[in-house]
Length: 357
Image (cartoon, rainbow, N blue to C red; front, side):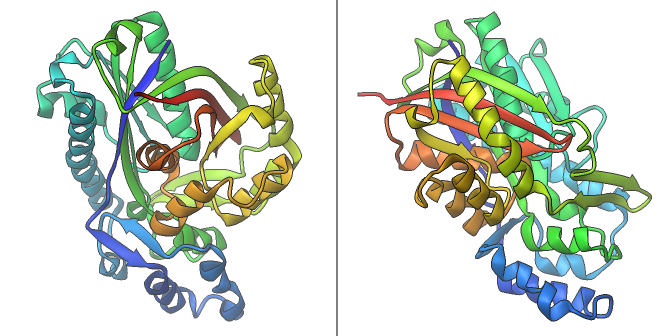
């Protein structure tokens, strides 16, 4: 059985208030949209107080080339990933030499060799580590990465797998893209780097984490004919964001049955779930989850807290939510992790969560 032994998240040095990003957007988009006074309300309706940014807001006042931004992505991703990994190792009482597998998840930058190779070189990890770079999963990547780690641990009970998610959404911002999708993205997305250690049965016996969290089951689903719901259009300027307003309706129309079917395959129902560890794609998406699953307004408090104080950090966000459950307390029993991403797709993982004595 795979176990999550530790988590870590990155608090970047630039915490930017939503009012400041709202002011920036007003200045940038003002001449393009005559009804900007109405559109700008999206910043308030996002219910975000502060955003986690790897660069100051002044960075966005000048045009930057795709090459410049991508080089910065590689530099920050490498340095902060190593910090996140070291924090996880310390929490689990492990040495870096014990890492057997490294999964690297990202959608907001490009590198070949991939960042996991750079991490192995920089940290001087075991050169025989099995590595798995995953690109393009967007917000679904955090839960998908856990599913891949689960498969590794089931195949090798001695495995110590490190999952790292890096999403530097701010560095994808294209200043001369005055589309509505970019306007919405400017109100919502931010930067996050998270790490998780997953141990196989044998490896877990020598670790004493603060909580016993087992990964029981996982499920991926791709929805046909929904490729344009979210993603990138890659052009000469970099990553041009594609973002549909249909996401809450997809949640209402599909996700309830998907969750019920997944839980039923594990002989469970929604009533059996004590901890809902959901990616907060936005406040409307969380409300859609509540309505579709008939849950009360406190169910997603931790998800809302992360959205309020960090913004949407794509694949890293759900791992920030998981970290909050582990660090601040969860209800003993089952936990359900869920993220939606490009494709259009959903990723679900079922956890068993108990405090260690």
